[in-house]
Length: 112
Length: 111
Image (cartoon, rainbow over the protein chains, first blue to last red):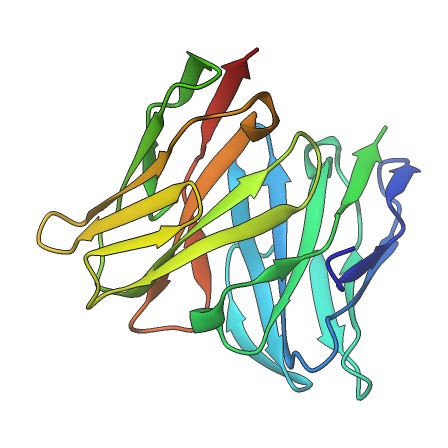
């Protein structure tokens, strides 16, 4: 157990639907990062939150959004899902990037 | 696009041999990190080397960094079947707070 908890582990949903992925960071970590991993795109940075505020944005689609709550857990919302959104979605947390990230075990999203 | 590019994309060796993976990057960095990922699992942080360091060791791992060539290498000595995984380099850029990951090297250690 890395200390970063992601739920659910697996998710199968239909095109056009909306899903919410949840992440609880490791105790004491204020930064949360979301990454998408697919076979053809590798690990793509989506978005970072620090202590409740958006800190950096990467290749995140407009159909996707995220937030970090006062208790520091974060949610990634994916809407109007397409087949190409099928991927592993990872959450990671850190005190600061200079100390390395701790990754969760990921949510495998399958859009059918 | 990925900051780091690992080389080779895939490596297959016998147990007991050493494995060397290389990473090249493009921009100025604060640090470079290596991660391991077992199939379908989360990434695990292995080692971090700062931009002012040239070499670092951790157990059977040795990392080098050449900032003039914008490259790093990860050496795993006396490899074991349990080392079979994908290995990613990640760079922490001076201009930002996030890590950018390379494409990864798939290492297979045959017993």
